Length: 345
Image 1 (cartoon, one colour):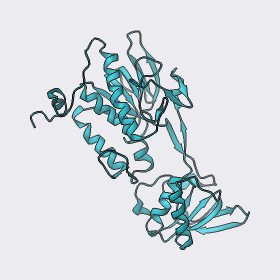
Image 2 (tube, rainbow, N blue to C red):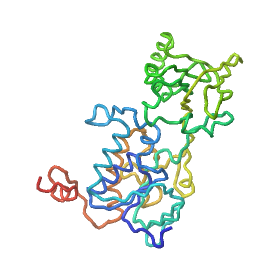
Image 3 (tube, rainbow, N blue to C red):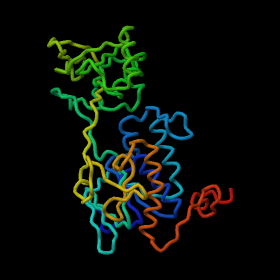
Image 4 (cartoon, one colour):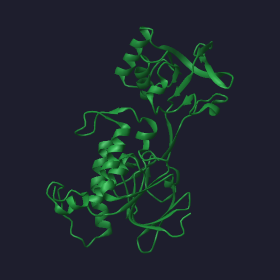
C-alpha cells in the first residue's frame, strides 16, 4: 500500500487499445498520465482473449495480430513515460472540493488525478466456465478459455465447445493441424458469421471435424489427466470423445464492477457520454472505447481511437480552461515532435 497518493494530471482506467492510445493523444498535448488496469498485463481483451487472432480493420495495417497491435501501441507511447499500474482494479472514485479526483485501487494504491478517463472495455470480465465436475482442477492445463499459442494444440486430440465466432474460428484454424477435432454446441444452429459456419460444415463433410449437438456431461480422467469427455447429445444419448485438450468458448460474463457505483449515468451497463469530448455526466470523468455509449456508437477499436483523440482535447479544456486550444499536426509542430522525441529528424 502506498503511503502517499500518486499525483498525476490524468488517470486512465483500462489498458486496452483505447486506453493505450489515449496515452498517446494526451502526450501529444503535453499532458501526463498514469494507467491502471485490473489485469496483470496491458492489452485488455486483445491480449487476454485472442492474442494470436488477426485484425483487419486497423488503418494502414492490412492485417495485424491482436497482441502485435498491443505491442505496437506500447512502443508508440514510450516517449511519454506513462506509468502502467497493472493488477490494480479501481474500486472507488471520490471528487474533491478542488475538482480533482482520488482513485483508490483494491490494493490500496491511491491516485490524485485532475481528470479521469475510463477505458475499461466491457468492464471486468470472466469467461463462462465449463459446467462439469472437476473442470476447475484442469483450467489452463487441459481446459482453456483462451488460446495463447495455437502451436500448443497442434497434433492433439481437441474438443472445442461453443457456437460463436471464437469457437468457429479456432475450429477452422486447428482442424488441419489437430490429430482430431470435435466441435460441441448445444444447438444445431451457430451464432457465428455465415461464411464461417459454411466453412465448418465443409470441414465436417470432409471428415476433418466431428460435430455433436449437445452438452458436456462429464470428464474422463485417468492418472490425474483428462483423456476424454462425455457429451450428452440432444437426443439424450451419451457420446464418449477422446481428448487431450478442451477449448471452451462460451463467451464472457461482463460486469461493470465498481464502476457501477460511481454515480455515472449508465445505459445498459455502458457509460453515457457526449460526442464532442466523450465526457460523462460527472465533469472531469470521460469514457472511451467499449465502455461508453452514445447515439450511433459502434464497438470497434478504430472508434475507440477516434474517441481518444477528442477526449484528449476535452481533458485539456477541463484541466486548463484558460488555455487557448488549437490543432497542431505531428508532421509540422515542433512542440509535438519534441514530445515524440523526433525533433530535428
